[in-house]
Every structure is written in C-alpha cells, then in structure tokens.
Amino acid sequence: MRNGTVRIRWEIKRRKGIVQFQDFKMKLDESSYMDLSLYKQFTQTGYYEKEISLYIKNTLSPGDVFVDVGASSGYYTLLASRIVGEQGCVYSFEPYPATYDRLVQNIMLNSFNNIHAFNYAVSSFDGEGELFVSKSSDGLNSLKPIPLVNGHLKVGIRKLDTVIHQDVKMIKIDAEGSELDIIRGTENIISSSNELIIIYEINRELSGQELLDALNSLGFKSFIVKDGKLFSSIHKLDSVPS
Figure 1: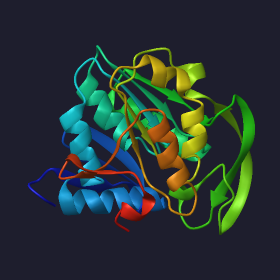
Figure 2: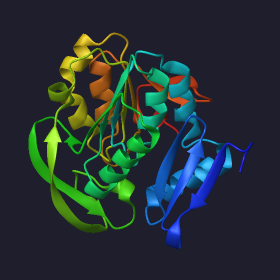
Figure 3: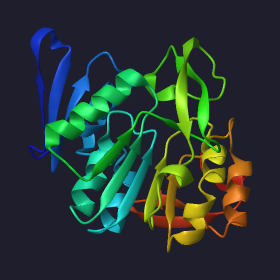
Figure 4: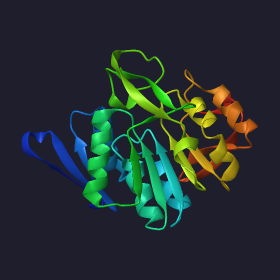
C-alpha cells in the first residue's frame, strides 16, 4: 500500500472487497478481471490509470458535467462526482447487468446524489442491440463482434443526445470499438457545449484512424495525455505510441 491511501478488506469467502481510495470507496468483485486490475493499480500507484485520473482531477471543476460511457464498476464516475460536487452532475452508462449492479452499489456506498446511472449501451441510435460478452475480461464486452465470445445478450441502446441536454465539460469513452458510433450520436452535445473534452482510447484494430479523422472534422484536436497533462497532438494513427 502506498502512503496509506489504499486499504482492502475482503469480506466473507473473499469474494468481494471494499477499497478506500482518497475521496471515495468502491466495492470490488474478486471474480471480475476489471476490478482486480483496478485494485492492482491502486496498490501500485494510488490511482487507476494514473495519467487519465490526474488529467481529470486537473481539468474538471465544481459545477461541471461529466459523462462516463462504459463506466464499469464506477471508478471514473465516482472520481468525477466528487470533483464536480453538488452543483455539477455525472451521467454514467454501463450496459452489462452484473457490472451495472456494482456501479449502482458503489454510488450508494458513497451516498453520492449527483450521478445519473443508466443500464444502456451508447451508440448512434436509440433502440436495442446485441452485447457480445467476452470470455477473457468483463472490460472487453462490446456491441462489436469480438474474439473469445462467451455469449451475447440484448441490451438497450441510447444516443447521448437523447439523454443529455446540458453543456458537457468532459466525456470519457471506453467502448471497445464503438467510439465512432458514440460520437455520431453526440452531435448536438458537441455543437452546443463549450470547450468539450473527449477522453478515449485509440484501438488500432477497431476504430483507429477513422475515429481520429472524424474528431478532426468536428473541430477537435487530439492529444496524448502524459503526467496528467496534454502532451503532444496527434493527427495520424502511426504517430501514436504502441
């Protein structure tokens, strides 16, 4: 544990534990690959995905609106909720039912009341679709076909434009190849929000250059995040470190 900022208490049968981290706490499931990865990074650095976490902490302010697409158990949802405070709000989307249940439990665990949680996938249309469930990790579930599928299930799908009618400061997207579809369903938010920031992961196989081009055409500049700050701008996929 580093500087005493992280404590883990495994409950009965060591199936679920509670991590106390800085300004919030989370109940984690030991059977979840994503939750175990979260805990491992906590113990090593005091953060999950430290570069992104620091950037969010350095950039968000009280009163801002934050959107978490692919929220998983809620780490970024809770991080942002604490920062934006009662005058701000967080919209959180997680399509997989068991993971969504953990997300809601973690919101209740912290008694945060500025979070709107939705058991939806996000895309370019409103309706229903098939979510492919990964054998290897609950963090790899996707609306797009994936390797090592452990089945699929029908989920509700919404455009961000359908749900959100506010000036948004930041959108974090973790959607395993659906990023471009999500952007296409966010055009009203993009056109109406001042200084909107979108945090996303470049997936060379699933979206890559097409996503970069789409964001550039909408007036965005893409940057690599390093040390919690914007480091270097990127225009071509081959300029992004592997």
